Each structure stands twice: as structure tokens, then as C-alpha cells.
Image 1 (cartoon, rainbow, N blue to C red):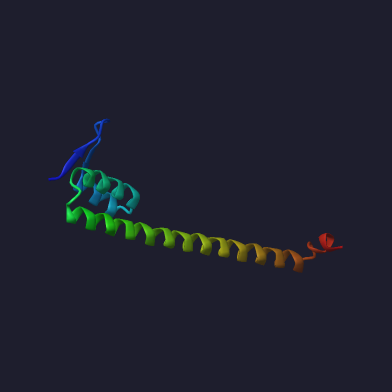
Image 2 (image 1 turned 90 degrees about the vertical axis):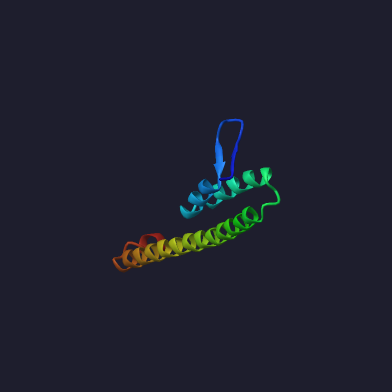
Length: 97
């Protein structure tokens, strides 16, 4: 099992990186793979794993951006609907005059 340890006693393993990846913590998984690659820079499996994690992180970032935009759109739709209902009840007139 490939393992590395930093000056603070933190241990980095392929297993740890895999767990981070499975949980969707792609930045942490990439950090572990980078640490392991420092020790074994010619390891093709580690390089492939890092590339995979970086691609997943990129996709996750795009997915998060789309989800945030969708939430904002829903919020604006709800506010617009509330304003229309207030206008229908006559509450908007005092602000338009």
C-alpha cells in the first residue's frame, strides 16, 4: 500500500484518496494524489487517478454553478409571483404614484 506522511503526522494513502473521491471531496482527493505523486512521480496509476479526480472536480463545479443559477431563478419566479399577487390586491399602487 502506497503511503506518505507529512511533518504534522498526516498520513496519505491511495485508500484515503479513494474515499474522498467516493464522497465527492474531489479537492481533498486531488491533494492526497499530489502528495503521493511527490513521492512516486512516475506512477501512472496515480497520475490517471489525479486526472480523473480533476475532471470530476471540474464537472462538479459546473454542476454546482447550474444548481445555483436554477435556485436563483426559482427564487426570482417566486418573488415575481408574490409581487403580482400584491399588485392584484392593490398594494403596489401606492409605490407607483
